Length: 192
Image: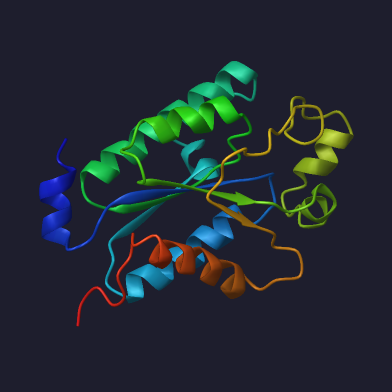
């Protein structure tokens, strides 16, 4: 693995922040805020958004259980490659099954995978449904939609649980950053 030499060049410890939760929970928004804060402090980051990757690398996958498993497998491998390059990677992906999240965790050294469960109630996720996916799923236009007719397995060992109900993005993001500092994955400031 190249992680050690690359991370020494970058003056940071690489790790993966894996944000999981229902569609509309706020995973991508939270990843964007945390990434921006880290970049302002001089850290090298990259966001792997499950929706974005479905337009390219994973555009051949549907939403069956097998395709969801493959989607997470590919995301985990890309995250590992970026980890090897010394980056802090934020993965925003529903990743509904515990076994797939465990697979992703197992690809990294102990302590370098931080699972963030964005625990937002289904009712609020449906209200935030800017793409109309929940409405379409409830109408039967989309099958195997997580939270409607396909299960979401709540994490059993997430390092952080963030409920975005009635909270600002900065409050939720600060909770994540505080955890990373407490676990000594980050040292503030990195330069200076």
